[in-house]
Amino acid sequence: MLADKRILLIVAGSVAAYKALELTRLLRKAGVRVTPVLTAGGARFVTPHALQAIAGEAVHQELWSLAGEAEIGHIRLARLPDLVAVVPASADMLAKMAHGLADDLATTLLLATDRPVLVAPAMNWAMWGHPATRANMASLMARGVAVAGPGEGAMAEAESGPGRLAEPAEIFAAIASLLGAAPRALEGRHVLVTSGPTHEPIDPVRYIANRSSGKQGHAIAAALAALGARVTLVSGPVAIPDPAWVQVVRVESAAEMLAACEAALPADAAVCAAAVADWRTATAAGQKMKKVPGEAPPPLALALNPDILATLSTHARRPRLVVGFAAETENVMANAVAKRQRKGCDWIVANDVSGDVMGGAENAVHLVTEGGVEDWPRLPKAEVARRLAARLAAALAEGVSA
Ligand code: C5P
Image 1 (spheres, rainbow, N blue to C red):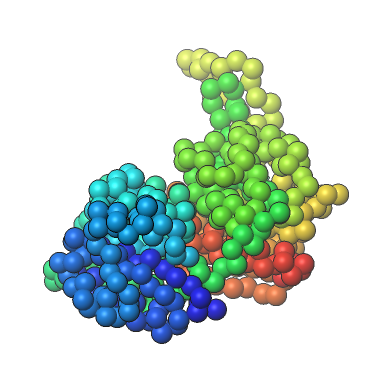
Image 2 (tube, rainbow, N blue to C red; image 1 turned 135 degrees about the vertical axis):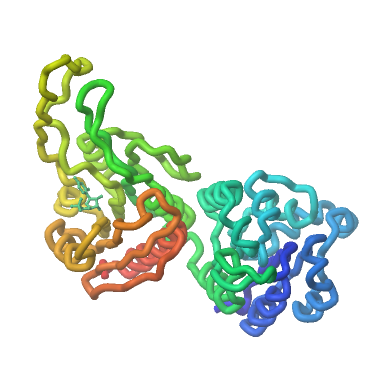
């Protein structure tokens, strides 16, 4: 399956660069053609000779030496591979990628490529945890860059923590799954995604809301679009950027979200990741409610909101595959299985939100289908999204909902 694939392997400056040699060996053993690119920092940790010998291909190091090779050497090189992998990706490399710097061959290739990109970060735990690196990673992941690792454990400086390069076998598996995903598997399909919270007005300035950030739903929309789907993303108010190549419909309340979803039908599939408020205020005040000194607070009468997932699941124009989420803080699995029955959807993605999931970068989910329950490991939300999009593409291709 990997035999006719080619990857551009960028080796950046980190003591973990030696592991790129082992990765190269694994890739070549699987028949993958590896074109190595070594940064100046990378060359301080591994020699071009070692990399070249294991890759069986010339190592590219200099931006300007490519100029004579063809009319536009670096553009051609950027578009040759099926995937660009940065292993190890140093903090400096991630920062350059996030900001679009192109001051050497590797960063120029990364800016010029239209191929999928995977990074395997490696750095000291303090650098990995720094807000600058956090922001750079969030920005890269929002753009669809895939991430392998990092792991946690002993570091070169006799310290320990998160930031350790993932093991070569783990990076190999991530590369294999990216290369193996059928490209454009959702071409011609329309998928509806809901994301974010809803705001239910109390009066013109106050509302009831919840902690949903929209990160998981937006990542799902991006992953579906990456597989070629036409995606309508109906989003409640969120503070994160719109995913690329997705049609975004912004709404505030559950009622608006339902109307936007119905207007988006027909769709081949729907993924309801929004944290829709269960209740709205029975009547929203037309003017700002005034606090009157000495008076008791006004009562807040609530009314039940429409259930968008249940409505889509029983709709006359029901999408062939309807996927719901179950955010729970207790009895996660039992509630998810019951919810799948009750709502009439095909799959439920269940997650425990008692920890730092809401608003966080990672998610640990269980996929509940007709066939049973699958436990997925704790993964970046973008990776959960990619796996879900691949499953959804496979299910639509098979014409079944299991
Ligand atoms: O019932 P509960 O809110 O736990 O169900 C969660 C699932 O139902 C999510 O997929 C969410 O998007 C969807 N939902 C909905 N409309 C509601 C409430 C929940 O679509 N009013």
